[in-house]
Amino acid sequence: MSSTSSAEDSTILVVPGTDRLEPDEPGTVTAGIARKAAVAFDAAGARREAVVPSTVAGQDRPELQQVIEEIVESGFVGVSLRVNDERGEWAGSAGTAELGGTAKPPIDGHVRIASNTKTFTATLVLQLVAEGRIGLDTPAADYLPEFGLDERITVRMLLQHTSGVFNFTGELYEDGSVVLGIPAPGTPLGKEWVEHRFETYRPQELVALALSKRARFAPGAGWSYSNTNYVLARLLIEKVAGRSFAEEVRRRILDPLGLSGTVAPETSSEIPEPHAHAYYRYEENGEEKIVDVTRHNPSWNPCGGDMISTTRDLHTFISALLSGELLPAELLAQMCTPHPTGIPAMDYGLGVFVRDLGPDAGIVITHNGGHAGYATLMYSTPDGAKTMTASLTCVDDSVMSIGVPFQNAQQKLLTHVFLR
Image (cartoon, rainbow, N blue to C red; front, side):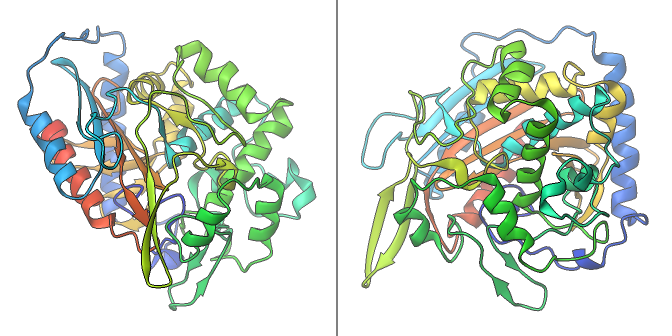
């Protein structure tokens, strides 16, 4: 449920034909996105000194309220939306904070941001690249020799999902074969995950599991979304910086930007108040069971999907990132340079998707995420001036029955925010 690719934290991902993509020969769609992205970033550079509109108190945007109410009716428990654009800021919510309740979701409540964590992680790696402490095209094994990584896997490939390394939450291969990983929501082992959701995983054991499985392809020979890449990125950050990921993200991003609602929880199962609740559904002995999984130990997906934030903080983060506050211009451009994924009009940079919304809206930079009943959207124009961030809660399950409504919800929001 992560983005249009269905590249979710826990979901086994299939992108037909990606094993056969040639990264040095992008297709027509990718080349077009690359050209549009370059133009967009050139324009962004000229606008970075412009004044961003301040919040408009009591903005009346009934069309936005209507669309989030329609999203709730499609099967979600609750939705919170925040839009920042030329008209200022609008925020609202619909549905309920809990199943069977009457209170609306908090407009700026805390939410597990799932794969949006990857954008924070990639930003930290690129900051260390800017300082000359990491080389983007240096073999990751040079920094993490203890894992016996293929020497052809570079740091760039980890951030770009082109390493070919097995996804420790499971893989579905093009020949139809399935190889399971650890119990995780949104996989055939979802019930087991619910039963063991307070278990602690060490990043090293997740990497070891992944490396014990066959790779999807030779390093650099394709694209495949793998949470393992970002566990390795976390270990790389900690090795080079000499601090935990939680300390480093707080020191380099959260404190400088004033993101007081954002947390890297590590092994803590708690989520700060206020927050909406998330649920997981499974069958046992022919009986449907729905479990509140709001509290769980997120160490099963370290740095690939474990952080907690708010729609306000996600807006501040993506806007600051794309306006050049966190990275030098050259590295920001590399972060947003599209690499082919096999998904039409949606390619991947370094920790972000680069999506082409067509001639009326152009390029947006995004990285959504979803797992265990929580989903988050984070979209921005390339200059960071116009953003849309949202949190959604639902009753999740192993077959991802909420998947199609989630895709439809994204499209509705994109249409109302970026295409009108």
